[in-house]
Every structure is written in C-alpha cells, then in structure tokens.
Image (cartoon, rainbow, N blue to C red; front, side, top):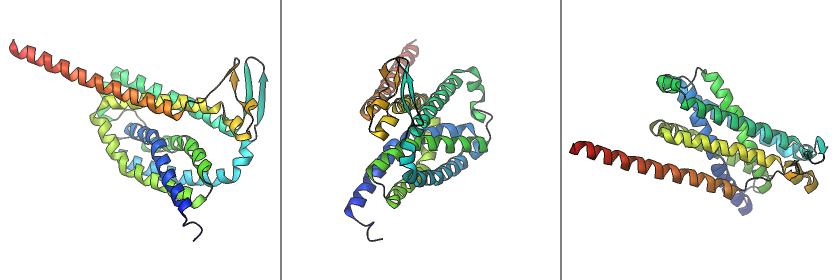
Length: 273
C-alpha cells in the first residue's frame, strides 16, 4: 500500500483524471443524446445504469489490456497490395476502424432524423421507439469504444492498475453527476445537440485516423503504417481536433447571436407599423 502513496503515482492520477475529463466529454455527449431515445420516464435511470455498467466493463477492459497489450500488438496480417492497400492490421486497428465507422453512422443517422418532419411531430414523446434496455446496451457499447482510445493513452502514462482504476472511477462518478445537467441543457438548447452530433462525426474521423498508425506504433515499425492508394493514413492531432470543436462552437455562438439580432430588428419594425 505504501508503494502506491508516492508523488509519482499522485501526479499520474491527476494527469489521468484530467485526461479522462478531456477525452470523456464526447462520451458524455453521446450518452446525453442517446439517452433521449428511451421512454421519457426512464431516461435518467437509463443514463445512471448505462454509465455504471460501462464503468465496470471499462475496469475489466483495462485489467485485460494491461495483461494482453503485448499480445494485441502483433499484427494479425500485413496487407501488401502495392499501390492500393498496404500496412499491418492488429487488434487496435480493427477496433478503431469499426468504432469510427459506427460513430460516423450514428451521427449521420441522428442528424438526418433531426431534419425529418417526423422528428418535429414526435419529439415530445421520445425520439425513437427504442426501449430502455436497447439504449443502455448502446450506451455501454459506445462507452467501451470511446474508452479504448483513453485507456491506450492512460497506459502510456502508467501501468499501475490501482491508479488507472481510481481515475476511471472518478471519471464515471463525474459522468453520473453531470449527465442529467448536460441532457437538460441540450433539451433547452436544441441547436447544441446538432453541434454535438457534428462533434461526434469528427470523433469518428479521428478514430479512423488512429487506425492507420495503430500497428506501426505498437511494433515501433513505420513500415506497418496503413497506406491507401499510396497515401499514409495519418491521425488527426488532438490540437487540430480541439481547434475544430472550438470553431464549431464559435460559429454556433455567432450564428445564434446574429439570429437574435435579426429577430429583435424584425420585432421592432413590426411594432412601428
């Protein structure tokens, strides 16, 4: 126990909590949006149960990954279709590709749903006919997909399981405390839900980019980097991702301010007449 109470582990814990908070925002955003697909009376319970199950499974995933990270690093196979598709494919590559495709599909589907006429007619009763169990299953599955990137980043900081587990439990508690507030905010400010879906779309692209270098980084061999038609798939940097998110928020803020100004001018003009 005394070995855990060191300045190094304390510093790592603080860094991991910050990392989980930053990387976990898109996860919380997805939970807040997806939980609204459940029956209205069950939405708060769906969020709590979904997050608790997801955190428990994330701990299991972390425990397994610490022990199997070396085994998963070895590429399952190496693509050698010169000029078309080249590079190594390991477990991380598959998870990033499948997770990225699923997130992009989910974001596009929900954006299309919000643009439909049916969305306006049935929004009060719930956004879809999904049961609470279906929504919880989706939340747990997507939490695991989102957590894969953060767990890999966390393991790069430390491999001390108690420290990693404490950071995950802290992030889970924060998500439970904030989920209802985020959901209530999105319900009152619907334009930010659209903004959140576009952020999820970017997250999907980020995961697809991470797949290109997964095998190369694991084996420290740049020849295993994925190439499509001779072009290497390069991950989006975190700074680029957050810059894109800031730009989206800035555009939405300016747009909403401009719209309010136009509405005020129109109202004033109508009052004069």
